[in-house]
Length: 129
Image (cartoon, rainbow, N blue to C red; front, side, top):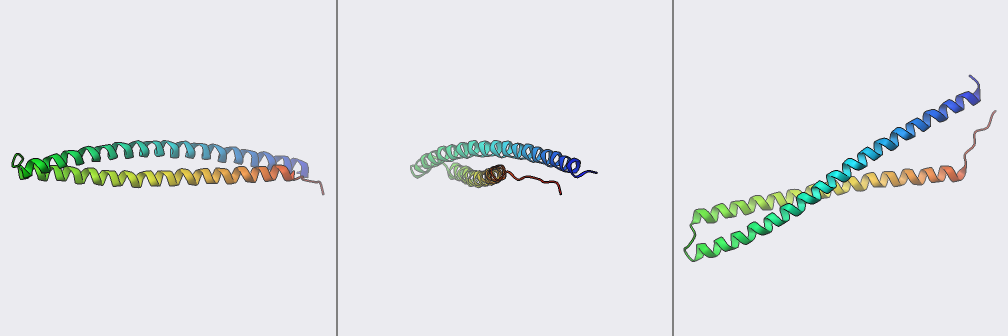
């Protein structure tokens, strides 16, 4: 096979590999972005829920001290708060993980973009031997 035909074939092969890699990165980015948005929404929901249950628990403690509420209600409210607090901390962890994955993908994309710019500015040429 002549060198020029082989070079053209190799070029087309690399262009296809590049296009596949770009599509893979786009899909990975969209998934990571969606996961981040979901994690952020869950974080806000759990934060609000914990604040609401905390206010309710404070009211129940006051009622318990005044003899209006039973120890069962107090215990039940404390359990709800602990559950809400656990959900909140889990959502913080999920948010941080989603953000880290999104940052990693953006970093990879940025590195590839910079590499492509360097390759284009160097104008690498293939010569016949």
